[in-house]
Structure formats: C-alpha cells, structure tokens
Image 1 (cartoon, one colour):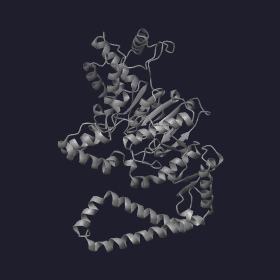
Image 2 (tube, rainbow, N blue to C red):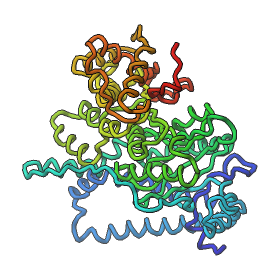
Image 3 (tube, helix red, strand yellow):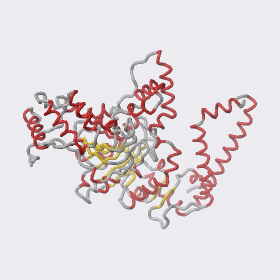
Image 4 (cartoon, one colour):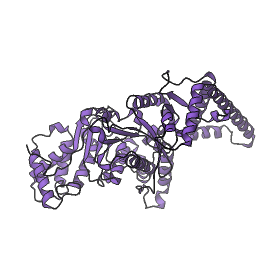
Length: 519
C-alpha cells in the first residue's frame, strides 16, 4: 500500500484479537495524531465562540487591509503544521505492522460490499474511526414521509422573532437539545464509548453495521442477535437513546440482560453517525434502522419492541407510527412535548422566540405521534425524575403524566371525560402504588365484551374505543385507575439511573376471549 494512502486512513482504536487491550501507535503516529486532535479542538472552540472572537478582533482593528498579511502568515503557519502532522501520522502508520494489516483488511473490505462476506468478517475484528467503515445497508426505494416541522403561517410582525429563532436553533439551540452531538463532549466520552463497544462485541457477540438513510446520512448501529440462544431472543428490541446518550453506554443493557435480541443505534451527529439530530434526519435514521432490521436481519414487525428513553421516545413513537404492526412500545422517562420542558427553563421575555424555534424546527411533540399508533404501550415513570418535571420534586408535573393521559383520552374518549381527566391527574401526582382496589377481571371483561359486541373480533388495535358512554362517574373512575395501572410502571429513581430488568416488560393490551383466563 503506497505511503500517501496512510495519511488519510482512519484512526485505529482496537484490535479485538490482538494481545494488547488497545492498539498502541508508534511515536510518529501518536504525536501526529495529538497535534491534529489539538488543532481540531481549537477549531471547535473557535467555531462555538466565533461571535465573541469576531467582536474582539473587530474592536482591536484586525478587519482592515493592513491585517491581511498577518492573517496570511497565521493561516500558512497552521496549514504547514497540519501538513507536517499528517505526514508524521502517515509515516508512523506505515511502519506499524498491526496498522498495515488493518489498512489492507479495510481496503479488501471496501472492494467487497457483501455484509456477511469474508472480507467484512475480517474487518470486524477492528474498532476504528467509523466514518470510513463501508456501508452495510442502504435504504431501498423512497423514504417514508417525514413529519413536517415548519408552520405555514407567516407574519411580517413576527419576522424578528422568526430570524432569531432560526439563528438560535441552527447554532447553539440544536446542541442544547441534543448535547450528545457536540464534538467536545464526544471527545471526552470517547474512552467510555470504546470500552462499551468492546464489551458489546467481545462479550455479547455484537456486530456493528453502517446503515445509509434516504437523506444520505450514515447511521452507526450494532446488533446482538440472540434468536438461537433464548426464547426472548426471537423478539428484537430496538433501542433509541436519550439526548446525551450513545448505544455503547446506554439503555441496551436492560433488554440484553433479559436475553432479547437487541439493535442499538446512534442519533445523527452522535459518535459514528453522520448528520445533525434535526427531527427530519432523526425520522429518516430510525426508518432506516427499521428497514435494516426487517429486510436485512429478517425480523418481522410483530416480533419487534420499540424501546425509547427520554428524548429517544420521539424516535420510538415516530417508528411506531410508521410501522403499526410492531409488538409494542416501551417509553422510559419520556415527555409529551419538548416545548413544555423548554418554556419553564428559558427567560419569559424570549418565550415567543422559544415557541417559534421549537414548533418550526424541533417540534418533538410525542402527544401527536402516540395517537397515530394503536398498539400496546408501556410508560415507565421515574418518581424522582429531575429532568422531565416542570417543577422540581413535584411528581404531578412529570410530563410523562400528560403523555399517558393524552393517549388514554384518545383511546377511550367516553371514559376520560373532563372530570376523569382531573381525577387521573390527581392519581398521577402520587406513585401508582397508592392506586388500590382495582377490579381487574371486571374491567377486562367489560373491555372484551365491548370489542366482541361491536365487531372488533376481540382485538384492541382499532382506536378510539367508545366504551363508557353509559357508565356512571364512579364506573369511569374505576376504569381510569385500571387503565393507568395497565399502562404505567413506576421506578423510584432519578432520570439517568439504569433500568432494572424487572421494569422492562412486554406492554399490555386487551386480551381476546380465547387468551384470557379470569381469576
């Protein structure tokens, strides 16, 4: 392999079959990489602070013709430093036999596009910079229709707010909502990500794949296939992470402990995934992951559980709305509408800008999505959640409460009258352990009878269900307590505590007469 090719080959992190815990670069490669990393961090810092830097330079008179020579010298010096660093790195790599074998394996895999072929299998023994990993699956055909973000109404009087909202979201705003997309944070957690991937690959037989979306992004995924190892393995759990979480150190551990097959992925702009986590890109990403699971891995939608944590609930509910046949949806520490979380945390005087920014560009409205999915749903609520509560230490302001109530209002409109909605909010202001004396058999019998009598053939996947029009207020309250207990599970913890296995369950749905035995 010619020397010049080593200059731009990817950074190697680990040889899983090697004798050392991590790949050890030689001195030339090590120092060259350190210089390039330092320059990249300086560039990132300059980018994020550019408004302040430009202001300082302008006040000091650097934006004049006489300063052109100074800028030219600085940029030339930086360019020479980059060139020297690249040459040092390339020379060091070409002299390291471990890296030489890796580079040859990568070149061979690029010539062979078969995901399961021998060259790809050989490449999987290495962990390296994922942007140069060959594509394993490309979305076939047109993408599913993404949910539009922008409002149609436009008023001249709101133009300043519109401009401010656009600038805010496309600079610091999207990074505040998804801090995991910030490169500085990723550099900090990189050792933990490598360690997490190593565990998934070596201990769980995980297989990393690159999936290309309809809009051209490349999504970093990993599959642990347990179909031949356990009964639970026949079900695939697709995990959607939070706004500062990655599959390497995220929620996959819970379904893995239960021996499910598990597919993890990183949001656009997170770790090995390209792009930015704007809603349209995130929608295309989870759609590509779903297509990969169904068409390439061979899982049927009815054998897939969608599992979303925190902001990952948006990705999960979008996928459920597009693939309504899935087995169920599990939402852990998820909110109803990101706007309701943003407003209390921002100064009131800029609330109009916040509303425009969220609704037009980052409209993560889970309430809208959950009414488009008629399958079984389980919400897991953290009773000490400090993130998705509007008021600290006030369980009644947990935005998951509102998501649950809005879903049940849509599904059972004649049960959730205004009086019962207020009753539900009162119940949810306390842990659900306080809900006592619920006649499960009676409530299930009423639901099953209604579905059978009204031509639903015993299936609940057709909402809304109009049961309850003739019920008394007391009967509706009983059904409210029953439905809350069936769709909600309380976990006494903060937002980021790992979920114990016993809380991850297949969501409940109304059984058919042939499947249910009354006790």
